[in-house]
Image (tube, rainbow, N blue to C red; front, side, top):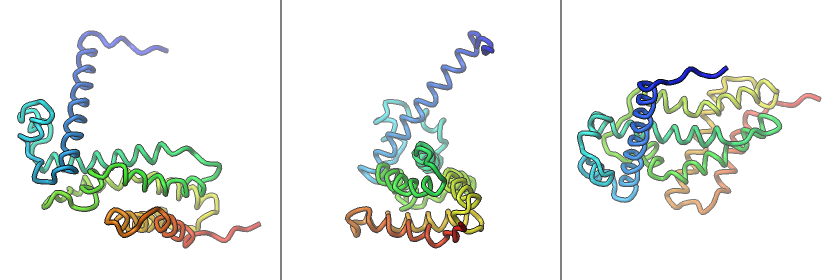
Length: 208
């Protein structure tokens, strides 16, 4: 069954939406690159507009103000992490998949330093994500909850709330990544050790 033709108005609206999304993505890229290279003071509407080749009116219309831009960056960072984790290939069993998500999460963090600094290191002084943004940010990591729930159902992990295990694993991962980014760790061995140890804390006794 084929979809109905868009018509001229539908095609125009679709194109307009695509242009809007493309511009929004460009502005976020410009902003996060400025944050990484020149710090939070560089995040002015005038500077971003100059770098992006648009007017400040466009940015105000799209994000409202600097706080709105910061929150959009915060959410974009978590969305990128979600896409990265969702792209990890499925494994033969859920425990193998959960184990594979660990290195993928570290790679996502280290490959997006600008977003990481905003999401976890308060790179923009005074910025506090709204409760809605925090809820959406945690939801971006729901893949951990889902895979852990599958591990519990399959008998690999002890019965408990999947979120409890996910948050413990997240905390272990973040601690190691923070130390690595600060130059205290030289490689991924500590990260692997603490994330593996966290999973082992919740392993169930397998019955023959």
